[in-house]
Length: 202
Ligand SMILES: C[S@@+](CC[C@H](N)C(=O)[O-])C[C@H]1O[C@@H](n2cnc3c(N)ncnc32)[C@H](O)[C@@H]1O
Image (cartoon, rainbow, N blue to C red; front, side):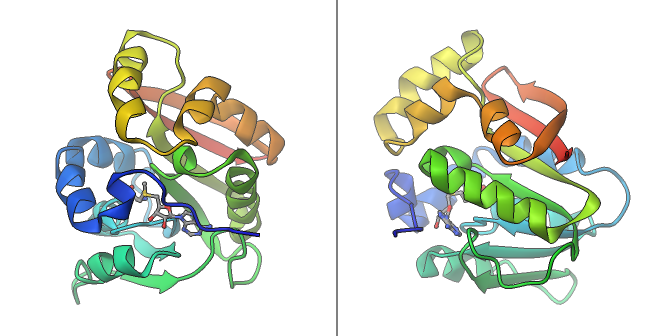
């Protein structure tokens, strides 16, 4: 079975992805602050070019980013610095090579919309397995189709996103979390268009 999805237009062009990513840096910073003040050991699943992982590491968290796309990881590795606790690994988020409950938290940013439902569930189930029983997950992604901001973005994002994008925003993230054994703890949005959701294992 294929476990690797990066079908959106930007995902196939890591250099352009990196460029586009620059414009949502404030979205990423807002998301990273949702992790709280305590220094955490975080697994960033489907880390891509590592932009979200970098923001977390700059907040002094100890971050490991994993992804299946070698070209994205090449960009990510350039973000490493001796001043940061930031590492990247070539790994499948649906089959993470580590023991249970070794991370304080997991993050998945702008990847859930890129994968089919069954793969999204597996990413979340693996996240649940690797975080501590009292840990949590932060998901940053397109908001569900619930308001003006998300509907406006839907119009544009439909043109360049992967075929998995539309089913994702129509279905709503809450159903993914429910099926994979999380309960939603908090939800906020960036202009109604991007959602930040924290959830804990049930
Ligand atoms: C749209 S990019 C998001 C990257 C990054 N998290 C960000 O915020 O910019 C989606 C990423 O998910 C990765 N991905 C998809 N399926 C995966 C899997 N099973 N395991 C690890 N990474 C995966 C792709 O390789 C791609 O880099």
